[in-house]
Image (cartoon, rainbow, N blue to C red; front, side, top):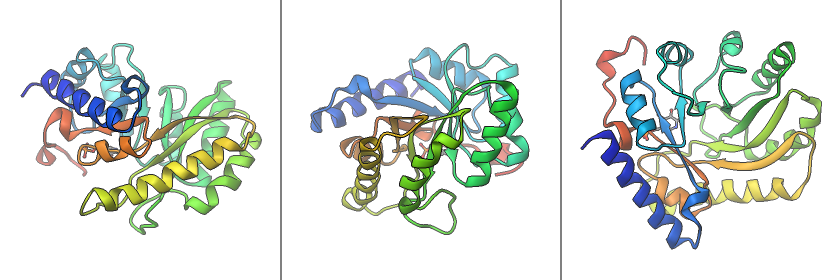
Length: 236
Ligand SMILES: *Cc1c(COP(=O)(O)O)cnc(C)c1O
């Protein structure tokens, strides 16, 4: 199947999941997770109508941007971001989805202030409390949201999560539902520099579950581009 056919298939599954939940499919964004896929593949995905591209690595982001891969489509950063690379990301992507620790939040604020811009971000939530993953614990998030007024060059646009790998839909939905509840909680409390527009959750294996549980942004890699070729990659 071509990338265009894959995108069409994903869109139709997204629409089905949205319909099952009584939601309008148009309100759910498809973000192509483009890691380890080259500029040509990225162009095909954009031509096929994905809403945005999500990059995991600064080096790939910079290289593909230089190759004109994104053609004006919004680019998000979705991977672990080292504070010493913040300068290469802030102001170059429309959304940093993976803000997973306080030090990173502070570094983004400092860089955005230096550039004189406001950077949109999501807070990454470690919803399964997994040691292997970054992200804030859910119980820390409401306080953090209240403190966003201290970060004048950041606008918080919502939450992102990568839940643990689950056996089935029911188990998936427990985590997705927790995220949805958390986002509703926060939306109810108005804070400065906060507009809870996005709940980014769901990947190739579980995006339909995520949509049924309230996701409005899914990040799909394998489902669009096929399996990633790890042999082509220097560092995993
Ligand atoms: C790779 C990646 C995805 C997409 O994963 P697939 O299973 O290939 O769809 C989504 N989100 C993040 C943060 C990723 O790193």
